[in-house]
Amino acid sequence: MKIYTGDRTIDGIDVRVDGVALDPRTDLKRITDLGFEWTYEGDSPAQLALALLADHLGDDQRALALHEAFMAEVVAFLDNSWRLTGAEIDAALGKLQDKGSAT
Image (cartoon, helix red, strand yellow):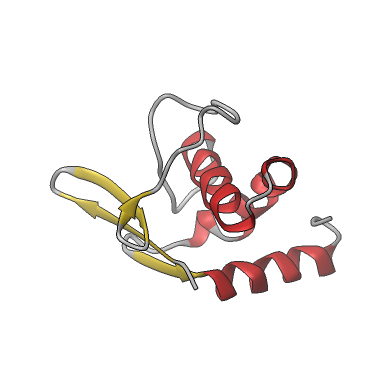
């Protein structure tokens, strides 16, 4: 199971999947040029949500469809340092589906 981590360091934002820098997936959709962010709703948190979902789901179209809802429900509420497992992402997507936001 993959583990995603994020941290604000003296050198800036650090987001990893299994210890490797997470691809921002700007090839899929460039939401911002400012990089990843979290703890609020906006372009940089949306880019993080898209990258997390694209990596986790392995389905670019589904990631595109779900990233805004995932950003609003999960990424906006992450702590300064955070850790998400694939199971936690699946659980969050299940809650979105229950709310009618996920397909």
